[in-house]
View 1 (cartoon, helix red, strand yellow):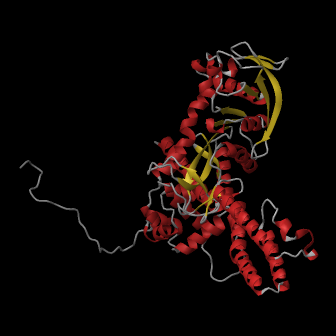
View 2 (view 1 turned 90 degrees about the horizontal axis):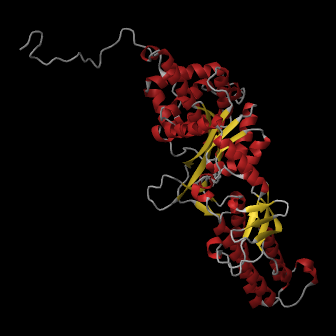
Length: 529
């Protein structure tokens, strides 16, 4: 055996029940450069006056301090401890949470009430204060705003869907049944009664659709007629129909009206979380295209920090950019100089809005890549490559025939934005040898020209090719996507724990605030390394 080595196995002393003369405090057990210390320091520094104002004087027992509760939630969401039960457990057993809580032990109900009732609506103000602090310390400049959206599943059941089309179909079927009942009752009641005036059953039967108020009025008319009837057999039959209307048709009509009211402009909602909309997600493990109740979370970043967020029920990103930027400008009091986003946001309405705000839009539109390809530019049947006479208002097709102006079409988007396009039609496609390659239409080929959209597209093309913005385009893929990757991938947060837009927004606000604190911690460690 070599010198200095023993032939015995030795262990370090292990005394599990050894008593301490002076027990160590949580302060001593946590390293000086630990992340939890930064969380505590930042929340103490910026304060939470907005949250403090929610508390009212009086009451019974003393409350847990809102600063302590906020620290627990922020650090909990940073370390995958998001459930109120798991957070209460951590405050009893985990030394970092015990230190944050000052050895206090709030139960899960207290924590859940704090998050759902007090923190809701205030976390946004706390987050905005933190963003302003980042700008003041030079971490961000609030000039370049990278925005993107991700879908997070709702806490509601996956099979609690209500489809707008199904509601409308069932509502129409119910209207048909009501018409049939009105016709049947008119046959039973053959004598005309002037007391019903302009709202007699015959006229009600000619309506296109019925409301719950109409059904209720119908029930009242039938009950009044019941009192005037002498024939017991007819009276018995009519009484049965009145019961069907009051116990079946009226509740169903109210149910359909409520469903349509909740849907609004959406195509669906969840019964257990009406704010959630059924959307198609990238995470399709069953590979059957199953729709799930989700929220569309719009997030903006700069220099790796989350600068803003909003939660929407809209599946498409296109409709969320304007309201998100408006809210962001109202929150921070400043507008970004440049907005960078993917092609999902490229559209006439968004381009026009950013132009009016004097903000540079580094955003591709849907057909940008195809239109820049050699194949597209050399295709003689693409209208972009046709000769257009602006003064005479006509196109010249590859066959040399003119497409002249016929009419101007106007429409509005869901948000009320007007879109105007001129329609052009070929003088005659008959006997044209190129027709099969030019169009699939049976008649003459028609073309629509939107002058404003064409101008905005040309402007977008110039911006996208400008060297000043090429680097920002490259940076886009690693800005917001990094936030989503950290939160959804590394932290495993793919499903909200709470229901309703306000509570869901609270959860995402805690995640975004925690992400920014992690970024500060990482940069500070790199500077001291």
